[in-house]
Length: 257
Image 1: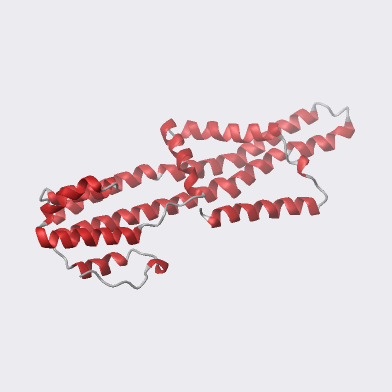
Image 2: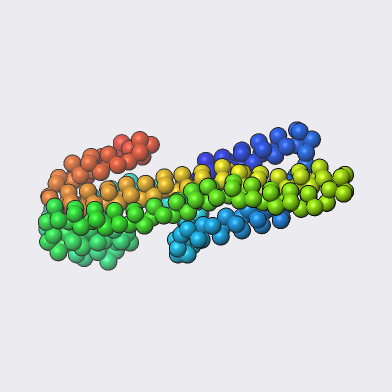
C-alpha cells in the first residue's frame, strides 16, 4: 500500500470538508448526482474521443498502482544476477539456457536468451534498448489519459454550471428559489476543479513515477546481462547494480564470492 497516496487524498478531503462545515455548510450542498453525471460523464466521453479504447482501459487497469505499489524486489534481482554471473563464470554463458524457464520477467528473459544465443554485447544493448524505448512510448499514454481528464473536467464543470444557471433563469418568477438554484449550479464547477486537482493530475504524476521505477528495473536487468556476457567479476557486478538502488535499500551485505 502506498501510504502517501491514501493519506494525501484523505488529508485533502478532510481539509475541504472541514472548511465547508466551519463556514456553516453541509455535505448535502455538494452531493448533487446530476452535477456528477455531467462532469464525470462528459470527461470520460472527451477522453475516449482523444484516446483509443484500449489505451483508456489500460489506464483504468493501471489505476490501482496509484494506491498500491509493487513489492520492491530490486535487491532480490541483484542476488539473482549474481547467481547467473557465478554460474556463467564457471560453466559459460550457454549454461544459463537451463535457467530461462524459471525467469518470470519477460524483459530479463529476452535479454538473457539473446546472450545465450551468442549475441554480442553491443548488439544486445541496441536490441533491448529499442525494445525498452518502444515499451515506454506505449506506457507514456497511460498517465496522459489522466492528464487529459484533468484538463477536461474543470471546463466541463463550467459547462455544468452554465446548464444549471439556464434552468435557474427559466424560473425567475420564483425568486426565493433563485439563490438556492444558483448555489446548486456551481456544484458542477466544484466537481470538475476538485476531480482534476485532487485526483486526475496527481494520479498521472504517481503513474509516471511507477513507470520510471519499472524502466529503472529494466535498465538494471540489461546492465546485469551485458556485464555477465562481458565476464565481469561478480563482486564488481554487485557494486555496479547497487547503484540503481535507493539509499534505503543499500544495506551492507557481504559481496558474492
